[in-house]
Length: 208
Image 1 (cartoon, rainbow, N blue to C red):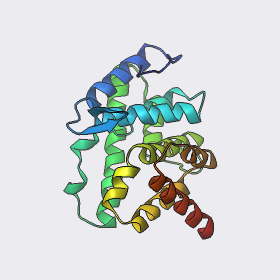
Image 2 (cartoon, rainbow, N blue to C red):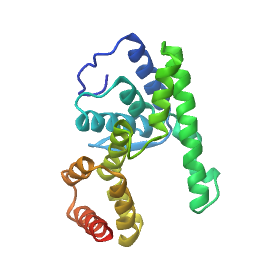
Image 3 (cartoon, rainbow, N blue to C red):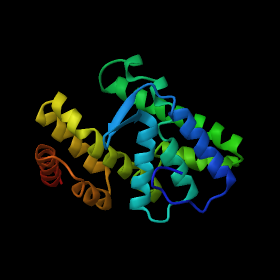
């Protein structure tokens, strides 16, 4: 299914859906480097989120795994630059991304043989409906934040002041479960990155 992954217990519809999702994300013109290898960004990102989901939830549901794989489906086709600067523009972009990801994923799932009920459930997870109340949505959110820390924190930190990086990390940690925060603390980071994460943890504790 992915590099180093064991097989899942799901059937042909699952295999067809994953193959179609991966084929779509493999078209990403942007690249992301990880472990010395450069690959299409959203394809790699989806595999890393999938891996974290399976680590956080040893027995993930079919819907959760499909959502993990498709949460950024063709994300590059709706760039942030198409929307106004500032928080209002950012939130509008994020909302429209989630709606588009859910809609296009639903089309793939139905073509693969899934019914509307399963497609809706996957879409709800992608749209993060019930975050903080729905355990599967929380697992996806944790995985997304962990991939950011694992693959993008270092680059982000070189481009922004420490205060902004700490603020972003604190906001991410606030959305995570305790299990997710513990996993973040175990990621291998540089001394500088670990220091930023420690500052964010301390700031979050003080804020509580």
